[in-house]
Image 1 (spheres, helix red, strand yellow):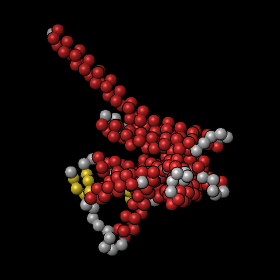
Image 2 (tube, rainbow, N blue to C red; image 1 turned 60 degrees about the horizontal axis):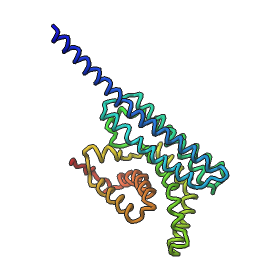
Image 3 (cartoon, one colour; image 1 turned 60 degrees about the vertical axis):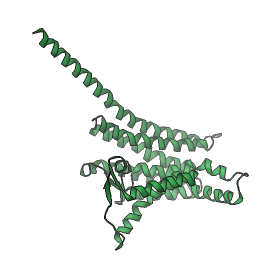
Image 4 (spheres, rainbow, N blue to C red; image 1 turned 45 degrees about the horizontal axis):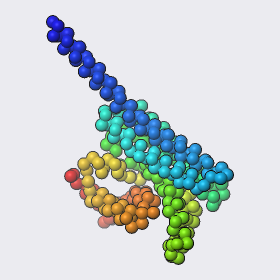
Amino acid sequence: MADTSNGRRANSGAELRELRRRRLFGVVPSLLTLGNGACGFGAITIAAKASVEGATSDNLYHAALLIFLAMLFDALDGPVARLSKQTSDFGAQLDSLCDAISFGVAPGFLMLRFCDVYPHRVQWVVAVLYMLCAILRLARFNVSKTTNPDHDNFAGLPSPAAAGMVASLVVIAPGLTRWTSPETSEMQRQFGEWLQKFSEAGLPIVTFVVACLMVSRIRYPHLFNQLFRGRRSFRHLVNLCFALVVIVAIHELAIPLIFSYYVLSGPARAVSSRIPGLGTAPDRVTT
């Protein structure tokens, strides 16, 4: 009888430890998601300092970096939740709320602080439009996620990719400043000056374009799931080679070029699929 009671106490102790372990690991995905929201809020506050007298362009650079850090948190919270078996509707709603801050409000506000070429009213309208499109994109994803539980692709440009496209034109500013220094060649200096003007004048246009793509029905691949869940294709190899070549050859422009490639790949694929002879069946290979 004593052995039975001891066995019951041992089992209850093991169950209690297992419950505590699950609760501990269950907090990690939420902390990652909240880290995403904290980075978005930090990007807004740091970018706001750029309008204060004495602030430098480093504020905008660091704000853009925080948006990329938010993207990292956003990419990790889902896989960690699945690994710890802690996926829930609460986590999904929390993720969208934090995404609205980091990938909806922060990029639009960053664009307002970085660009001063067009009338402020025009840039404000573009920033508000971007924020609204990001919120609509996130709401549509929450409603339609049950129809595509594997998330191999998205309908519309994902909000993190749109935010990364906007932030990438800001984060390259210090590198372009080095290109325009007196120590560089005349050709490189002229090209750097042109890129500086293009990044500032083109940022509101890019912001408007990615805002429209977010609420479109153009299909975009889910890169994380397709690259890390065992399914490969020849297109993935081409994309990886393109990224490596860009990083090695022109690392200062690698981030905007890689994001531009992803943003433009959706419309290009949609157009090619409507042209007879260009649309091809997916060449998916399992490795």
